[in-house]
Length: 565
Image (cartoon, rainbow, N blue to C red):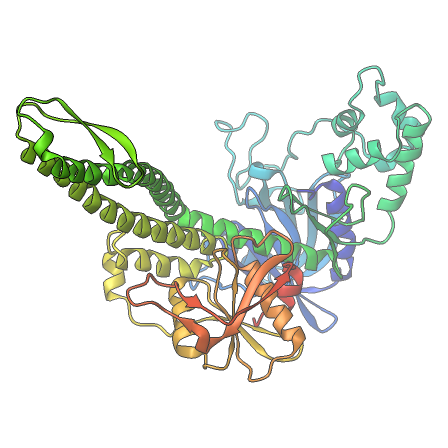
């Protein structure tokens, strides 16, 4: 993602209003995340500092975090040295992804002290360090000893040393013409060369520079370079882009020519990052907690699909049962013509008027030969019936596991155990010991409020789907489900919903389905009284009639606005 040096620059610029604000509170809600609450302009602002290997960042957040009852030692050190202090400066080092926050505070005896928070955004090597006014390390989140790192030591009491750099050039200290001396046009790959030579550039911005002109020459490169740098120094335009075909997501602080579709604008960089990282963080937490569950469901789905293929092949082989019955009938009808020891019988098939040759066992009597063919017929008939039954069960299992697979893409951390318990109840997994002792909890179904003020409920798993459709909703309420696509049950709790509410409910149904990333998704809707759950059906499975169909295209940000927090 594009949290590069340029993005860091814009974040630092947007945080300048915090200077002279008082640090009101410090929390460490997660192992790799610090929250510094700064009081400024009669309002509290939550500054998030994260060194998560995949989500390293700094920005203001409105998200509410649960803080541990017993704060970690790292948070205690920060509280001791800077809680109650005044922010004196927020600055970026060069154009790199390094930020320093100077704080003026008081020690235990009331003397003024100066501390600096250093955030190093370096992917898996990111770190958060607190130093004193002599740049001596007070504490670092990740300790680096001389034995583990040959470049520098990050330990309390050691002098702070900046991480080794690649001696890149700050693009804001030169012009486009001066940038020419760092580019070899004969080597090609101009975007790569810009990335290798200039500090704070990401592939996103170097590709933008290289694509601003049809050809890169000694004349067009300086023009594109200066053009993009000038736009960078303007007012930020926070933008989020998702390509539905590739699934690729990008965000940046300005519109780029390469963002040609599916662009969403935000009011601030902080709102943009809150939206992006909150969604990714939730997916990451679910992935970690439910990784084994996802693999299990995919294995079961693959297993059922292979089983279905084999069953269909076996069913194809039972089609010869009719021939076995015909042979038995013809032998019986022509038994007077057969002599002991005959190896075949040629007889007229009275169903189509054609002659047919029937193999015989010469060691058996004509009557026994006929009985053998009848036995084969009955055996294949029984086999056909059982195979049809198994095929139906296997198809139901495939539909069931496809629905579970779809639910796992939208599930929250708190709902993972519900799916585990459901799979155990269906006999697919072993029952968890702790789940037997688990107290019965109230069903929490996600609610949305339509533009016209109506409540729309969405079942996130099969238990919620069954409860919503069969117990909570009334007979006249409208029920929604994607047409022939695994998805959630959606219900509008209104006697007379507007057309706008119906469209929004259809959008929710499309989003919470296997086709959630597609456009123009077909969605059926009908009244609850026309929705029926067959006896013995798996959780979440229903049949319905008297439906109407409309087409909806999911819009994540629009849906988030409807969500009841």
